[in-house]
Length: 125
Image (cartoon, rainbow, N blue to C red):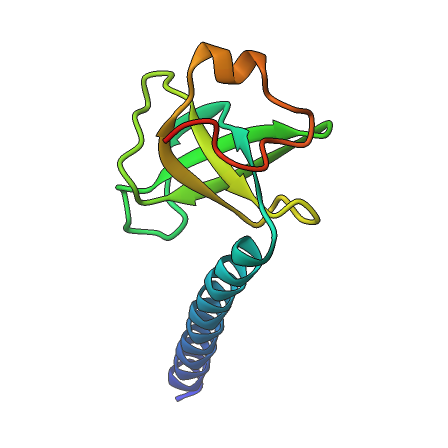
């Protein structure tokens, strides 16, 4: 009887944590979209790898970028190549943890001319 109560309690706790995690993810996604419309700049990805922001979603790509002396990362479900191709990353300047990958491929000229605080607009589509 005691083990059944413990199992039930653990199941309830796991369900509650799952619900909290779901709402946190949705809220973060909505906030990212809001802030990236409000103010943004573009920087260049460093690495693209297969990763997963959520378990069971193997098509996600993890990207990293370096900005103002710090490393940042994000996840995207758009088709990014993992062969060393670099992409523009849209980010919110006051908090670069709010970011989003674009499908725009970076050229060597883009890398050479990258402003320290990022491009205010994409140099090309």
